[in-house]
Image (tube, rainbow, N blue to C red; front, side, top):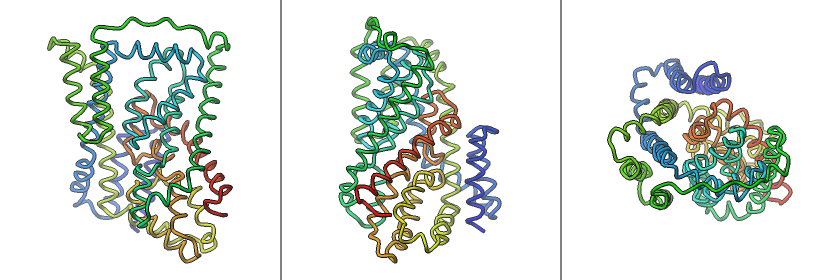
Length: 423
């Protein structure tokens, strides 16, 4: 009963969002509410919702002030010279721009934070895409791919996999270095192809696409603003201070420096209030969804049911099967539920067929909340990448999911060829 309602709730949520019949905010709130009522836990529902909102509140606060911070820097003209500099470096060639997008996202995501990656990469490059009329879905997809093909030892999924199965992360990651290299090669190849397709769509010839770009004069307080931005990003990446605190202080300093008059400060804040309010609303709704699904036991129930109904014939081939399914499973399970709930069960099943648990962990990392996290409705990063890119969530998912799933399939093939696990 519990697992059936859980599955229906998740499938209903995905269908509602992808069909665009209702907004993500409505779907994220009403789908779990109906599921909770269906299992007879209506009396506990308010507590479940508050628990989820409490966990998401710091993230929501970070996103609100991050939007204000980067938006105000844009209002102060700080991004224009930076965009001009990037344009001079890559010209107006969409192929080079998309490859540069992937490279920038990959470098920034080395700290393992998808939120930080998107907060820095997308606002910096979106004006460039708009300048040329490039499809913003390409920006969202390219940044998502580069961030997704990243399961370094200090990233969340790898740490969870090692903790859940009592394995050192080096034992999981080291044999997969070659697989990750292949995955990154695929990302840059796709980025180049998407850029080529945009170049053809826009009718840019190679000569026009690489034309010179005039430099933009530096605005007032450019270097002070740039230094402030670097300090804010550096402190945030260091992890020594909560991101919401960093962005709150940074926002206040940007306002005081560039817009000292209180009336202008209110005007600038109001100009970005719509985007901030929309983002925090969706994030709070996502907190409601995860709170109800986790606190009611629905996620745990569907995890046990999925593992328990696995056909015995799949046992000897479990690692490649898990690898292929890992990315789609990100749409159903949040990282904690999968890695601490499902993965140990799968490892136990694999052990019955003489397969080491490390192979199941490696297979899961090829997609479960790696390539899957930028499109999963269970992660705030999905709403962040869509919101910052200025595209509808459903449009981002429809565009990016095939490419992200393809990255998982390519890495799965590489894992088989390189002998990480066998078919």
